[in-house]
Image: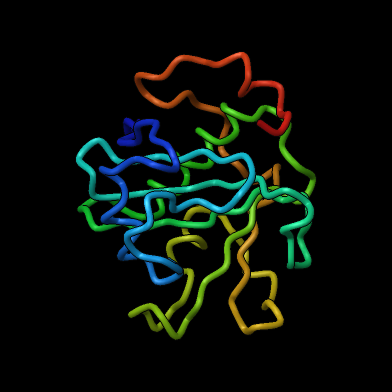
Length: 170
């Protein structure tokens, strides 16, 4: 079994900011917060070469056809690890943090025009996500349903918080 490289971080972590600033969907590079409103799980690789954000957006901010789904709003891997492995670990950590998995699971949106791959979302497919369509703006949508998710796994070095386990918005 591969040990997860992820460690808990937060939406204001200055160590994560350079990776967030290099992600193509970053709206205001340099601003101290890089996560949308709502509940979030921010993971930074121990060696600081990868960053992941799972968001559970407030209903008023949802503008897509998968309301209620967790959203992977940011994933950047500049290290040597396989992106698909990092993604599966991040999903397992999200499941551990928020025990009530939404019926629509998790989605992510990929802008094919902003990446260097001829196969947009390949790493998500290898991790178990399925291409389920496009947004109105033309982004690829990938979804992982609860049945396809890895089992919950605690983030290495973390402790459970009584505020994170119940699934309520924080």
